[in-house]
Image 1 (cartoon, rainbow, N blue to C red):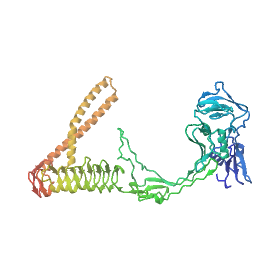
Image 2 (cartoon, rainbow, N blue to C red):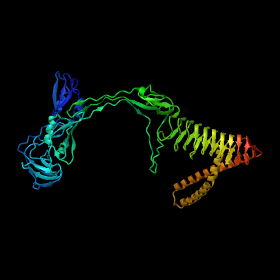
Image 3 (cartoon, rainbow, N blue to C red):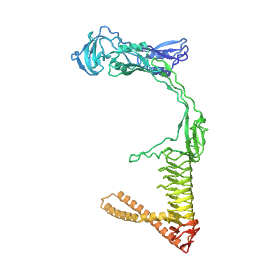
Image 4 (cartoon, one colour):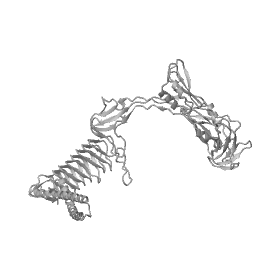
Length: 612
């Protein structure tokens, strides 16, 4: 603590036996301050409660009050080690073995105010790896052979040819919150010598008694042993933003143990008024204490400038100035300077790849690069792509605009609105109206409205409206199929219903039989009525699915008959050449395969046949 005289502070003696509180004139010390003083220096032993109470009274002069007192270790003169009957040197011993007792009166060890033992200041008759406990028990610190020097000192031989006591050099870290010694291989430090050196160095905080024992045992390698540890400084934390929405990537592990790195699992769309983050004020930090008992002042944190974090579409909440909110519904992202922004459109400034991940949003999307193969982009609005769509899955509830093209692949591209694209090759497309600036090649197209392209080559094009192009088919006679005036989704529903009808009918018959059998088991009390009710519910659900399927088939048949009796109004317009081998359908009843090349034909329905 600051020793300027403005506040009380605590002083521990160099031998760590006494702790005093110095109080400036005219001041008193409350209980909370005393608790902080005691805990900061680890004072836990010999505390004088009466002295602490006296500090709560003001005094006219500066005073120094003894608040805790331990006791020094005994100065041993006539004590001797009495070995056990089975411990006559040389004898094999293990770590922790009690080999004898120190004979004499009084306590051996002292006690510091931090609760740690204070070793005797004289070596007695104990040498390397021999320790004396507080109760007088003499124990081995390591395994080896118990031997006796010529002067009568007992020690543990650990098997090295030579080992000796090392001179004491206490080292400190830069902030003086840790003290340590370096002991070379096959060297050791007796406890009383190390403790004396620590007293001379005035180390009073965080003495580690177990380290003193460790230093007394020689080992085959050099060691760095921490002998005292203070309290490191915790510098203040700068002001920052604690995000209230999840910006992190959450990769998921599939059942087969594989991770899909395309699915990042990030929350990126928010509604207007959503709390995005909270500005956390800076902290002052927590002071430290070095091994000499001196207080170390922390560096306070710096306040955050709100302008560094508030970006486009965000603001500080007027009612709660520490809360950052979205001004309107949009996509949350950070700009190049790290500011929080909310935009009405989901803007990707690069390719959609592993760096960005899949996109699934309610907002319109603008992608300034490509959509790479294997990725998914879904939007409940429009999607605009400046590059190409590789073999990726793209779905738009609104319109889809691709400034470049759609490359070959197996993943479908779908828009509930229109699709505008430069070129398409070997792809499956579903949309309302399709407009292709250059070529539409070897693709499967299902359009509710019309299809317009400069060139249609290969594949199958089905449109509910007109089909218009400059070139239809190829000079080589490659098969190209176009069908105008036929709703492809109606046909798809009919195909699905037709495929499922037989399966559903078989399921209904099977469940009907099961219900009859289970009903008989209920009457015979072989089955609970509850299980029978479950079977009836399943049978009812299967009947409903079958009825829906049959309704679709009936509706498809009615529409087919109606189309057969009603001329198709849609046409296929070719402004250039229509080549032989091209198959042309109008609705689902009039079709023709061209056997010759035609220039600028217009195909239309005439009495159920294709005319031009």
